[in-house]
Length: 355
Image (cartoon, rainbow, N blue to C red):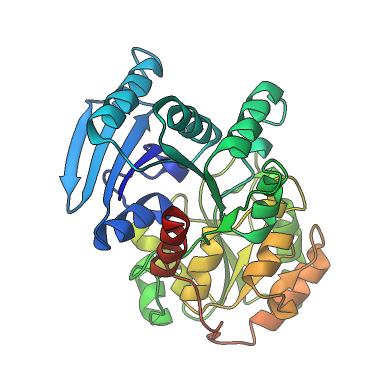
């Protein structure tokens, strides 16, 4: 098969041309290993030279949104469809690409697939015209896939009796695996004698980060040997307590080192239109490293953790979070059982395309 993927160039801030990452890279990559031809047309929100790359059976093309607005990207997509004649057009990484994939599929008579890893409508809740176009595209696309069952059910509301298939998230392998804790702490200059609780991700108010700060205050009064260390992007205006340490935004190759430095990892979210359908990749990464995790008990996270109450903390409840962290600190490494990888996700994705 020939598959054209429409995607932004920097999902989650990762430049796909230089930093292969997540489902946006590994699904096309795994398909290419199976003998399919993948074409990734990337929309660059920066004004950089147009780039063209080819490796194995993957062709990468990056088009700028400026100076000619999205029209240049649209025209390039039309040219590719006419020259390559793909069997499928896949909308990746955002509302706009799903809408465009369905539109181009209808225009050229090509099958279209919309893939979602978040509830995109939660990003711009006020933009109802965009939501209407998104739901219409989801309803009319040949196929749809989602990162988990909760999101699949949400998309299914727009697809009547049509199915939505599940293509789960996964940790990038071999980057994430168990590593020696002392060695990792030495590399990041972290204290060996402390019990380190870590958070890796967006330090945003709407994710419930204050709950983690409050839980740390409770923990400090119980055991002063517990340190809280954060890494990730910090929202402007968020004030960090002086009792914790923030490492800033770590390079990709340091994230596994950071996770393996921890005695426990925390994944924070809230019950919301975003949180209920969020499948945090950092949770998959910590689990792959066998680090004890405590995550906010949202429907999507409960599914990832197979409803194991040891690892689930009540939303917006710092006392329950502190209690669960204390219990997690008594563990060493955790065997979470069989975990999904990108090869398995690609198999599920390929089955949708073949079906």
